[in-house]
Structure formats: C-alpha cells, structure tokens
Length: 262
Length: 333
Image 1: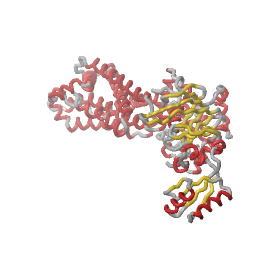
Image 2 (image 1 turned 180 degrees about the vertical axis):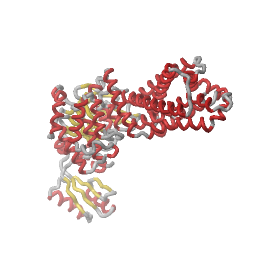
Image 3 (image 1 turned 90 degrees about the vertical axis):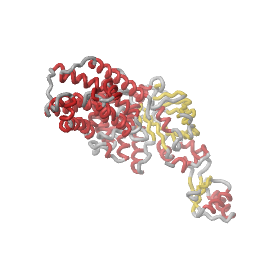
Image 4 (image 1 turned 60 degrees about the vertical axis):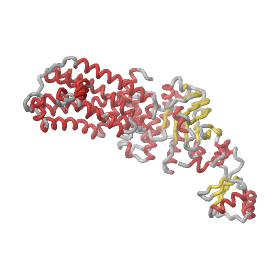
C-alpha cells in the first residue's frame, strides 16, 4: 500500500486539500505577503535616506532599495513559515487527521502536502514582493542565470524553513503557541542579520551572531546574485545551512507525526 | 435496502467472502498510560456480518479499545487481528479493510461535504469517475445532497455525524468501528443513525460499536460486552445478559431524605439515590412481590410518593455484573 507511486499520489491529494484551505481562507496568505511589502515600503520611504548613509552611499534612496530587497525577499520566506506552523498545529487537533491515520495511505503525505502547499504559496508571495520592489525602483544587473539561481536558493530556503515550521507546529500544544514559536523566523532573525543594515555597524556579540547566522549567509548570497556584490563562501554555506535545516526539520516532524495522536 | 447500499455491497464482496475466521479477534489486550491501567486483558471475538457492542461508562476503556483495534495506538500486550490481518504484523492491511468513525467528528471542517467525500475517494485511490459516483450515492443515501456544497463547519451535529459515516463508507470497508456514534445527538438524529447502522449490517458489514447507552446496545447489537475499569465483566447476547438478572426492579420515590433513609433501613436492600430521593429495589414486578414490598414499608410507617416497575433491562445487567447501579454511572456524561 505504501509503494512510492501511492506516496506520490497521496501527497498530491493532501496538497490539493491544503490549497483548497488556502483558497477558502485567504486571510493568512494575504497577511503573509502583506507584511514584507509593508516592511519594504517602510524601510525604503521612511528610513531609507537615513539608513543609506550607513552604507556609505550618502543618502541615496535608490542605493538603499538595492541593498534591502534581498533581505525583504528572505523575510517573505520567513513569514510564510507562520501560517504553516499554525495550520499544522490546528490540523493535528482535528479529527480528520486521526481518520487519515486509520487509512491505508502514505503516512508522511499529510506533512508533505502541507510543505509543498506552503512552498507554492510562498513562491507566489515572492513573485508579488519582487513585483513591488521593481515598481518602486529596484533594478538588478542580474542575467537569467542569476535570477534562476536566486529563485532556486529561495525555494531551497523555503523548503528548509517550512519543514522546520512543520516540526514547530507539531510540537506546539496550541495554534497560538505555534504562531509564537516561528516568530523568530519572520521577525527576530531578519533584523539581526545583514538584511537592513551591514552587520559591521552592530555592537559586540550581536555583530558576531549576525555575521554567522544563516539568514545573513543567505542574504549575502542573494545580494551577490541580484546586485553583483561578492558572494565568497556564502554560496555553499547557504546550501549547507538549508540542507541541514531541511533534514533536521523533516526527521523531527516525521518522528513527531508517527509517534501517534496526542 | 437502498440502492446505494446495494451497489456498495457489490464492492465489498471480495472482503466478505475471503476470510472465514472472526472479523475481529483479540486476546489479552493490555494498555497503560503511565501508572493508569486502561485495558487489563481484553478478549474479544466478533463474527463477520454482526454488530458487536462494547458497553461501558466513561473512562471504562472503550475508546482505547477502538484506538488499538483501528491501529491508532499500539497495545502494550496481547494480540489482535482485524479482517484476518494481524494488527502488529500488517497494520496497513488492517487499515485497508476498516472504516473508523471516532467519537469526535473526523471531517475536514474547512472544506465542503462533497470535497470531504472526494478527498476520501482520492485517498482510497479510486478513479475520478468512480469517486464522483460513490460520492453522489453516499451523499444521497445520507440525505446530504442539499448541503453538499456548503462547508462542513456550517453543518449541524447530526449532519456532521452523517457526513462522518458517509466518509467512512467510501472505501467500502468490511469492518466498521463506530465510537459512540450517537453521543450528543438529539433523539431524532439518534434514530436516523440507528437506521443507518442497521442498513450497514444488512449489507454484510461487521460493526464494532461502543456506547454508553444501554438501550442503544440492546437495539442494535447481536452481542454485547460490558467493559468496566478496563476489564470485560460480562459478554453475551442481549437476551443472555438479561438472563443474568432474575428479575427487574422497582423504583420508589420519597418526599425527603429522612423518609428515604427510613425506607432503606426498613427494606434492608436496594440502592438509594440521595439526590433524586429514589430507592431502587430488586423486584420481579409480580403483584405478590409488590404487595410484600409495600407491606414492609407500611409496617415501618414509611410512605412512598410514587412507585415505578422496571422489567429487566441492561441497567440491571450492569448492576448485577459490576455491583454498581447502571443508570447514573453509565449514562452520566
């Protein structure tokens, strides 16, 4: 019963179910794409001129747009983790998941459906956010290859963070707790990174943390791909971080899910 | 039988004709959660095509038994097979043969009734056309056609329970577990559910039903097992269980607690209920036995406000096998 073709088919069925949920209750999805757009406009139009002096650009808003967009794109991925964790946590308390467990279906299809559904939604959000960025003056020198690499990296980050969010959702006793558990992904970590200001401007141990945490690594890679700055070791480090987080999230989630009903 | 049931039977025939053993067999099932022993060695044998009812009060271990037999949780000890497949060795084969309707509705509230049914059809790997056909049939059979396009969250309790059972039937299971299927339903919905269960059995399905309602087990079951604190305290047909008690009982109603106490002393038997001011006394209900009872009350100068005669029912069985009154313990929510 759990042959690979059934696993694929069951996952596709679960994906359809999750996309149906998203279509029926779009408020979460809209909130997810809204937050990074507001942040983008806020940082460009309110703080942009002041912050760009820190870049050594001398108060040039256009330069700040170029600086901030990679971070905003990663923030979009981070905020996509929130509805995932909440949806997984809510789902586990519903009788329907108990029913799935008594059916001869691929066990992990429930989780895979959530992950693929979330990744699709976040990728759509990324297109929208990129559109807004272009509309307010973001210009990239990147060719098709660089754009493709950036999209691939974002998809990889998204997969990793989504599996982590699924694990956090499964571990949370209530949807509110799940929402809090993923807050660092959409809020704290993007700010303590090179998303909005260079880490060299940060003090002491915060600077040390910001320099080595995965968000900075990914942002520097994106920045390199889209605006032509140096990537250095950040490229393979990003891929390693994502692979590590994805595997960890997957194993942890699967272990929690197969352990049985709460 | 309705036409929908007819067609479903055709689909289940390969399940029903293959194994000749019991549909459900369990031996020495044990389960503990921490220090609390929930099931303490349960033996069961349910023949194919029959209704088996597990009867017991809240916390007796009914849901745990269903969870073990439906592969949701694993037993700490003992062996069981369902539809000819060993639970521990081939849980997926068991899952392929069973349908489960839990105590709490197992429907996806965010999507419509029809979408729920199609979801089940897809998970049973039915083709698109076959899935749509079965969905339409079952929605009609359970009187859900009008509500098919509405989200399940907007359904009433009875409708949601009907959708729940309809979803359980999509895969044409040969063994169906119903965990307290009528708890929380109004009397009309309860009778509709009973009818649906009878239709299922007429179609050859084996039904494993848990209930805290004695009447429900009496109405539906071929065999009943009484579960109390993790042990089976009695097993048999409803008639056999009723034979365990020689007669019925009478219920005496009193004006206040003092009179109730006096009556309990005078009769030297029975179960007083201080809240309802009632005394339940074993009595076969014959004129002679009733007269003797009233004479003893008269001798003690105790006056009863009202008297009702109860012929033997499963309440008495429960009392006989557990030493506790069935009524309030069994039906208390």
